[in-house]
Amino acid sequence: MSKKKHRKKHKRPFIKPIEKSTAVISTPEIHSETSAPAPKIATTKPTVHAPEISSAKLVYSKQNSPKAILSKTWGERFENYLLLMRVDKPIGILLLLWPTYWTLWLAAEGIPSAKNLLIFAWGCILMRSAGCVMNDYADRHIDGKVKRTQDRMIVSGKVSPREALILFSALCAIAFALVCLTNKITMMLSIGGLLLAIIYPFSKRYTHLPQVVLGMAFAWSIPMAWTAQHNAVDIKSAIEARMWLVYLAVVIWALVYDTFYAMVDRDDDIKIGVKSTAILFGDADRTITALLQALMIFTLILIGRKFELEIYYYSSVFIAALLFAYQQYLIKDRRRDLCFKAFLNNNYVGLAIFVGIVLDYYF
Image (cartoon, rainbow, N blue to C red):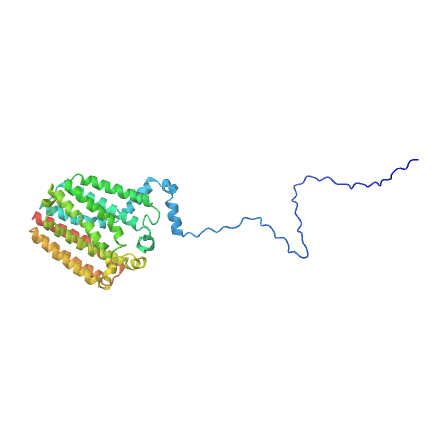
């Protein structure tokens, strides 16, 4: 019998088939006596903190986004544009219109042409509106820091800076189209008016005399009205020395009433670094404005003599002097509301002088 090698048989262990299951298999944590527990892997995304954005900037950016601008109806846009132009506050138009009409009557020595009356009335409305638009564009970064101006159209985001520049250009273009109905000399002079309208809003950053620049801008309608009424073909023969007396009177007058206006914002302007004659004059503001008003009255008397005006005109100058005295009474305590009231009161000064000139030529 052959000897066979005996092999020991081993039984295979029974392996249970793995059933398909949707249960989550958790991996057991492995620990050792010498090692710390394995760190757990975070299953949530880390929180990313965005930089803080002020609510004012957020509103400004949202309302000036292309989507927001396109979503505005034409009615909303038109209303916002009118508010940006300050059509709801016509005091600026009147302060510009009165001396323009003085000049038209003085140049015509009576009733000026209806065409010039209409051209310069609309010109005053358009250019004063354009000046307001440019002023708000220039002050868009500081208006939010001043209580009285923080709700203006650009800083509040209701009108974008780009829209403001387009509106300014459109207003100036329409005004120039009106000037083209006069003569070449007047058209040439209008360029100076445009430059002053652009320069004034930025002047308050570099000089304490922005009110003088405003006076020069407001008075620029004087030589334009003069040359238009004379239908001048030569600037030397058209512009007379007595016309520049009217120009000087308007510059002095604007310096006074815009100083009253600047007294309203003086505290805020000092904080944000904006310059004005109200800051420059300081505690002497009442004395200096009173002296300037006296100088304007003297200039108006000289105008009366140069143009050979009589009792009606000088009566209007006397009324203007009384109104100036009342304005000094209003600003005596430098209260904001009363300084603004003194500013508004200058509308009656312009009206009084205008009525005096008209009556003097009629009677």
